[in-house]
Amino acid sequence: MKKINGLLCCFVIYCVSASAALIQRPAGCPDSLFPLNLATFDQLCLQFNFEKIDWEVARNRCLSDGGDLIQIRTGSLQTFLQQVLTSQHMEKTGFWIGASDRDLESQWEWVTGDKNMTYSNWQDEQGTKAGKHSPDSVLDDCALMRVDYDFKWYDVPCRNKYLTYSYICQFAINGSESSAGNTNNAGHTNHGYTVLMKFAAVFMLILQLLLL
Image (cartoon, rainbow, N blue to C red; front, side, top):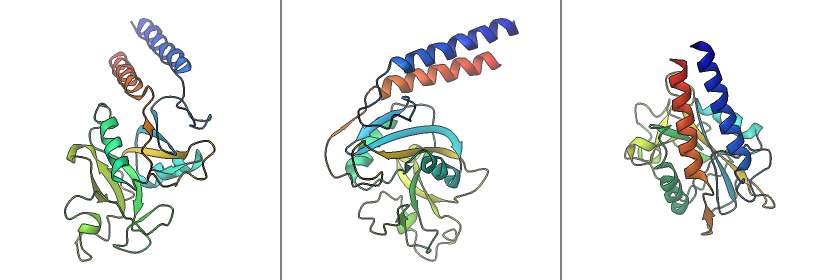
């Protein structure tokens, strides 16, 4: 039985790898990125990662790949993320995003150091809506976009072994200046993202069944 499960597992992995090889990477996304769970929005390539880790590790992963945690600077990008992520079932809680107030309490800024957050989507009593005297404000220094609360943003501890979530990295589209560029234009696409997401979900389910 173990041998059969092992063969089935290898077959599933082979199918995923073969399918990924046939899927076209969204135009402009860095060639170094694996072509699963990618989408583009204006001058950004977005990578959706479903490994549950803390905020600091998530940011370091993005940086090591040449990008950074996503900075949701416009309502149009927020809407796009909601549309894309509504179709996925692998993360039911939230995604780390690139905002924090670690440098100065209650002064929320993007990870690039940009303190001019002209757009935000904080839940009531969270982030800039929490007030300087909130009892948890000293500990809750990093931003999380909650899937289970209408994609509102929450402030949570940056490092806590019980608070680990998925995360979204952003990269500069090939030829654009930086991964932190503004997202004020309207063009965006999610080439193959929904199909890939469902395929990856099926793969994870089969793998879990095989390991029972």
